[in-house]
Image (cartoon, rainbow, N blue to C red; front, side, top):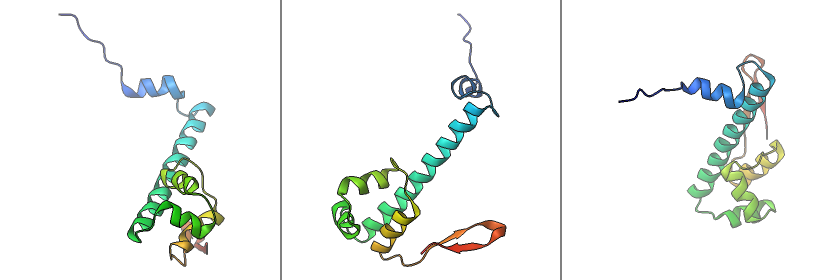
Length: 110
């Protein structure tokens, strides 16, 4: 029986994304971080909308955008600005939000 050669996953990641600390790897990790954050914000929007039994179209009407834009936000397929985030969450009845800056304190977003 022939021996199988296994390649550690870290080696594959290094081949595709570049070695840790290289500009290519840093850019890829930053992009991945942005996409994960967009996903979590989208999930928060979706969950709040569903708790209120709203359709994407109804939420879109509340803030003046089409259903497709709400779909993109909820799926994390587009970045959301703070102003858009404020409009969405205020339309969902979430009147205040803060950003925790750690040692620098908290900042009211809306």
